[in-house]
Length: 392
Ligand SMILES: *Cc1c(COP(=O)(O)O)cnc(C)c1O
Image (tube, rainbow, N blue to C red; front, side, top):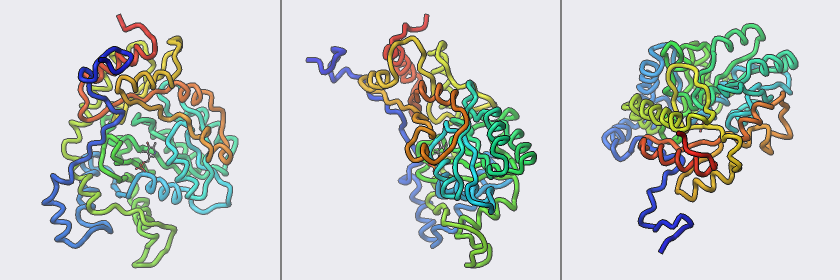
């Protein structure tokens, strides 16, 4: 008896390869530390575990530059940082950001009272397009309060360009580096190290630096970090007294414990994922991958463009992979300007490159526990699904 069109019996079917396999540190391995939190009686409010985490992240991820503030998740971090960077101003102001990013970034800008304004991306790095950003800055002038570049899929942005943009145009800058913990810039420093504007990272279960829910704001400017810390605590700039806009964005001590545990062995996690991502590239030499800038990348999954000429649609390719037990996705398609909530209310510049990339993007599986053999299996299935001949 066979159970599918391949004529293969269920018993012979190779194990499934899910798109992502979140593997945060096991709370059950941290019982002694959990007991210590219980004994301390301190469960949140920037407690001792959180203080240790912020110091450890500053030292080990950012080489001692600047400082760090934890938040409950990156979306809260973006909300706070965008709100502060925008300052006070008339209604109807914009947050300039790429349409090729995650909904959280645009949602955070809207919560901060701004309207997202979408720019295009570069055709090879998929980072925000410098020409598109400059054209929109020239067109909209002072209506743009904040620029929120996204370090696309953990790729490294040219941060010097954004520091100059802040000075030249008087705009706020907030970097969405949600997927970038583990990425090293061209000088080999943790991406964002010492940058004078807030750089916001996610430690969500699906990111390379996987916990459950957590986020981190890194900044080279202590005054900015202090203000954001007060904003994250109800805007209390004086004891129990709101002196600025705020909300509750604090990370619990248990959340901080998970992140501290993730830091152990993190170098190995990043290196393993990079090895797997390299293997994808070697196995698919004629496919179009993102051009990576910087020294090392934090691979959350492996994005690639579906080639022209295979004659299969993306939906057909994803369905064919699913029949082989292989999970895949298509981040970020639909891109933001295509999503119903943003489409009607957010203006955009030309988005030709975004449309081209988003229209063909596939996100391939990656996980801490994945093997190179599994990568080979995904690539073989992908070639077959796209109806392309194997590489010679
Ligand atoms: C994951 C992600 C976020 C949101 O991070 P959370 O910690 O889940 O809030 C924001 N922006 C981008 C680009 C992301 O990939």
